[in-house]
Each structure stands twice: as structure tokens, then as C-alpha cells.
Image (cartoon, one colour):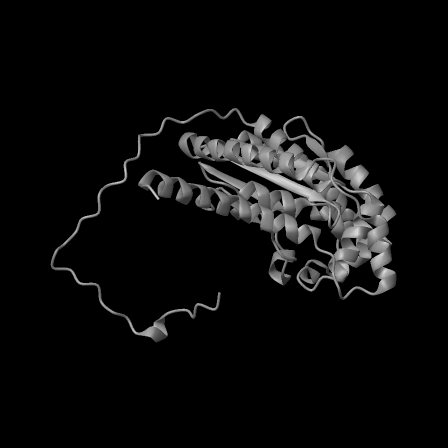
Length: 308
């Protein structure tokens, strides 16, 4: 084998490893589970459907969009831009899947995800927006909120964790809070992921019978099925009362997860006026060799066993 052939095979293998990471997540989404009871399996099969985008097209478009996200990241870092993206929607609507694909090839020091737990006793006594403020971006950063301050208009309202007075105060305050963010130089983009009743049922059934994904289900998620119509009403009011010119809502149809991912990433890229950033050419320096250096032999017990 010539050196050129060897080099080409190594490059191809590296590229395939990069694609395998996405393929691994896709195969995980497609699994059906042997431990499912016949009746439940029948329900899943009756609800299950394929994507309107074939896998080859999906991968090709996703890789292209992720390359653009890297260009966006470079521009954000170079210019000191500040970007906040809010992801909201019903449980199992696909927010996490989109966030994974956005961050998959980005620098976590530039693009980070914020997914806050329920407020503790101290935080419950603070100004409502206070616990979100420390996570806002500095210059050259992108922050993705996997759920956000809109918890008050959604789950907290439906589950009676907030009083009606607190909810109305939120609706009064949030437009001005977001205008303050925009005036401070933050670009704020808000997405609502819309999923149908049947599709959410399918995704919940898949999680219930999948040990790897059961952690995604909480008692609150299960209650969201019971209170579907209540969630619908509060969602509609939330979108109506918080859709401001400075930070409008964008609805992502998410029954087809592949289409939702591509459409959301494509739309996000359109919101930011990024462009190519000049880079100095990178040259890999030669390794400095010391003829007197001898590599130390390390004891075998320091090495991870090669099980595979």
C-alpha cells in the first residue's frame, strides 16, 4: 500500500467515525424493545411511522447544516456576538434531539446548554428571572436553554406550582425582561416544538419500555398526558401574550423528528448575520526528537483492559 493510499484510508476512517456518531444516535431512536408486552408493542407498532426524508438525504443535509453552525460559532466568537436560543414545547416534542444536533460539532466553551432543575427553596424566594440571569452569554458565546423562564407560563401553571397572581405578573414582566436582553446586545430566538397527541403518546410508550430512556420520564411528564387540553390552552395564551417584535416565537412542527431538526437548524442559521471569519493558515510543526529520550515502560495495571 502506498503512502497516499494509507493517508487516504486514514482520512476516510476519520470521516466515517464522525458520521458514526450521528448514526449511533439515529439507530438509538429507531430501536424497538424485546421486553415490551404484546399489547403495548401492538400500540407502538400501530402508532410508529417513518420520516418523510430518507436517511441518506437527512445525513447529507445535517452534515451541511452542522458545517454552517461551525461557521456561525467562529463568527460569534470572532465578533463578540451574544446569542440565546430558547427551546420550549410539550414533553417528548424533540427539543433535546435538536439541541444535540446543534451542539454535536461545536466547541462547548462557545456553545453551552442550560437545563435547570426545579428551583430550590432559596430560589423560590428570589425574583423569578434571577436564577436564569447568571447563565446568559458573555461576548462571543451561544447559550441554548432546554426549557427556560417560560416554565412559569407552562408546567408551573398547569401543575399549580404558581399562583394565578404569579402567572399574571410573569406575563406582565417577561416582555420587558426580554426587551432588556435585546437592548443589552443579546440576540434572542424562541422556538416552540409542536407535537401531536398521538405522536407524544408513541414517544412516551417508547420511553416507558426502554430502560435506556426511562430517565427521561418523570411524574410531571405522565401528568402532561392527563392534562393535555390544559397544556394546549396555556400554550396558546403564552404564545399570544409573549410574542413580541424584539423576540418573536417560531413554531417547529416536530412530529417528524428528522424534518424538525433540519428545519430548526436551517431557520436558526437564517436569524444571525454571520459570515466567514479570516483564519491564519495552520501548519502542523514537526515533532522535536531528542536522541537521548527513552520512553518509560509503564506497569500493565495502569492500562484499561482491551475487552473489545
